[in-house]
Length: 218
Image (tube, rainbow, N blue to C red; front, side):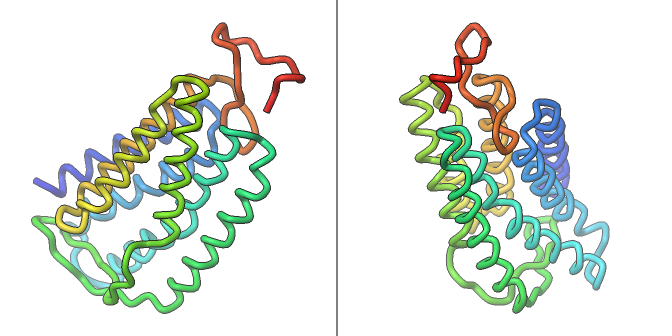
């Protein structure tokens, strides 16, 4: 039953990826595609069975999160102020390198949870620092957008992810569900702003859908 739920989450995340791609939010699209892959691999694990094939697919899960998750910092920075995009790329790059260094020593072992089979790290290093930093930054961006535009979706989505990530220690599927909620919040936030902007995210627009004059752009 749980494996079917993972499959359903993968489809929801993939649908969100398509929606984000159609609106030109390419960073969020890449992240959505990555988490859909994660959910799909876990959902299909018991059908694939233990072995090098499933282990390789699960290594891909870790790589996807290491490379793509920090890029949401760039997405959030572009929503607040375009001038923050360059330092956001620097921070995201540093977090990606940090994660990739850890992946070099990654050792996996199979683990069953309910009717799902996945490969997990044999060593526990505490909370994933890059993911935590990314989520906290999205929370701050969400607060700014809520205050500036009365748009609470990103804040609520990041808060949901933070809560579900903690609960995922006992119920792993909650982490994937939290990612779907965050992606939905990103899509809703982009719909509120409209248009296309730096890093594939949406710049400020007037309520009537017209772009602001250059003098009032971020």
